[in-house]
Each structure stands twice: as C-alpha cells, then as structure tokens.
Length: 189
Image 1 (cartoon, one colour):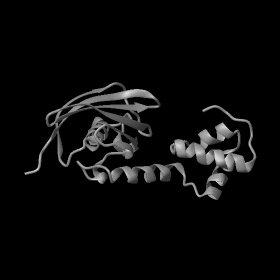
Image 2 (tube, helix red, strand yellow; image 1 turned 30 degrees about the horizontal axis):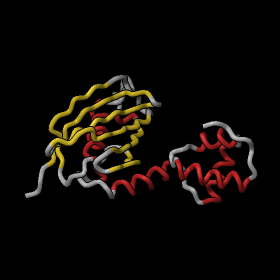
Image 3 (cartoon, rainbow, N blue to C red; image 1 turned 120 degrees about the vertical axis):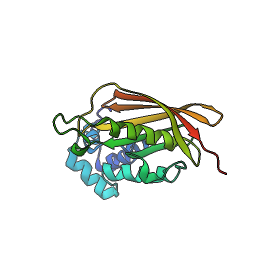
Image 4 (spheres, rainbow, N blue to C red; image 1 turned 45 degrees about the vertical axis):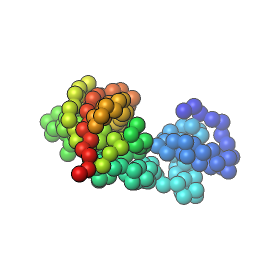
C-alpha cells in the first residue's frame, strides 16, 4: 500500500470506508501509513464512522462465511473463516498462542497447523458429510507462537465422491505448510 498525500478529514474518511470495503483486513497501522496520519487519527475516524477494530471486522466476515459451510459446524473450523466459495476455495486465519506451542522452543505443535488445514479443506467442500480419506502433508518451516497463519484452500478436482483439496498455509507471505487432501463425500441414506 503506497502513501497518499494528506487529505482533509471528510475525504480521508470516505477513502477509509472505500479501502476497508475492498479489504476489511487492513490494520490501523496500514491505514495510518497509507494516509500519512497517526494511528490515533485512524482510530478516531473509525470510531466516528462506526467501523469496528480489525479483530471484530474479521469476526463479522467469518460469521457470514460460517453460515455457508455444510460439511462441518462452523465452531469446528480451526481459525477464523474469512472467505468461502463453497465447492471452490476458502481462506482462514489462525492467531497462534503460547498454549499451542512447546514450552521449551515456543514452536507451534504440528497438530494445530494440520487441524487448521484439514478443517478448512472440509469447509470448502460442498457436501453434507465429508471425511478425510487421504492427506499428504509437508511442514516447510517452523511456526512460532504469536505468528498469524493464513490458510488458503482450493478444490483442484472432483472425481466421483472424491474431492481433491490443496491447502497452503503462510506466515508473513512465506509458505510454512502444504497439504493435499482427498475428501470422501458420504451420500445420505
């Protein structure tokens, strides 16, 4: 995001609304840099405009996406489901915490990362019941507690009742995990 010259308050607030409509995940810091104003000015603008803080914006987007999921209950998804195109793709965000990591090394345990990937893969499948038949995973680099994991899933192929889903997880735009899942769709009786 590049800096812009200083705008008057009204124009800045209109542009702020426009930017957050395009990308609700922009931080106050990002916006402060873009508008070349203090973070406090951005917070005051958001307050006046009734725009919630980043965490609440993410939750609002996630709640809308949870309603679309068919194969699992929204609460079973590991991370915040921020984008979902059922049968095609999805994105989730997981804020890692110290309780997810080994105490000695502060490295996040693999099952937390796998759970985010698997639950996102299941969420994108357009079916009432889906089970993981096969998973081929690779941890590409360690993740530390406090890192924000961005998972992106894509349905790459459907063959009969098998849905092939690829999931990639990133920290700061660096890929740290990849998984290839074959989800088996169970038809109702």
